[in-house]
Image 1 (cartoon, rainbow, N blue to C red):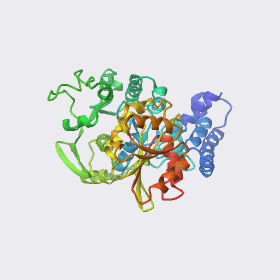
Image 2 (spheres, rainbow, N blue to C red):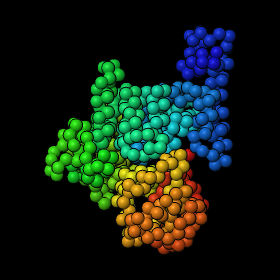
Image 3 (cartoon, rainbow, N blue to C red):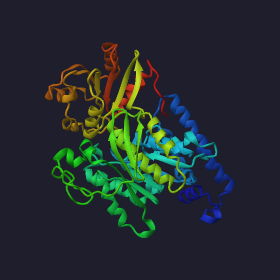
Length: 472
């Protein structure tokens, strides 16, 4: 009886159409409408108690398993999924703001809770009491593994696959498994898949798509880099060995000056300046100032532009408005986010794998800043912190690091010792460490490199002394 009842609730069909006996349709509809108010109540209580943003989604999934599918199916432009190892949150934020600049109403899982229950929880905050969502399209950031579960339930119309890098290998296993997860997302996409042509494991997903039957064959487009920028964004193989396969099967890290065959890209990042960048699309190069900090964010802006262009399709596009909106995008929470403490900026830089930490150090140089590093090894961070030994910390040597904190504070201290980087206080308790850091660096701009759960803890503490954007 229960599976049949779920079929009724999910498809919105009368009992006669599904073979469910002895149940009044009005009762079924009442049960369906009850799930949303209950979920909203749980969401409110969870927020009052400071609970996790995904918990209400877990509750509504249990009592109404097809709530998410039913709600998202009503969107005229469907669903777009953003996934990959690095850059999901900021890229999703960019796509949302770009589409809004073109007049679309966009739903997104703004909290960054990128599991299916996080999407359901975000929906509870947006739907009315009958479960209706006032939006044209959903742009969803999804964790690589949980995206597989999502696309099995809701086939995305669009997908954007950013990169494959060593991250949480204790959870994902070897790196090619992560690539296969992204392949599955692509295989379920119905309209357009946007791929990073500079990452061979992502670019090769086009081969998987081309092997699909004609009925389930989405189109493929790429975003990419100018040749002069490729050394700034090495793929995982290049970081470890200096060479790796390209989409064409030749070596990405070929001899200097040797050309590498790459597919044409819809959007190409041509130049990154101190406060602006050049993007090429439709045969023209546009320049825009950028509020985003970090070279990795600027590359992801090319990805966001390409997905946005795919969603807008052949319809009218306000290109000047699109470029202006891109320049106005501010960093997502904890991703180069700048707060103010004692009249000085304090920047939070999320680091969670060798590539991210490397680009973070390059994008946010230590000179003139007081620096703190916070390393946790909770589930959301990845339990294996051995990747810290794949990061070079020499850029911190001159100014040193004032405070080390988090569960792995002493591991970080040992790592810095091997790179001859001086450091001060080692305090695993984040609350005490943050207080020491702020008190000891008054009058100086500050920068904190932090893993995901330590970033959340630091934001909670900073909210007690400064204005911190609330994300729920």
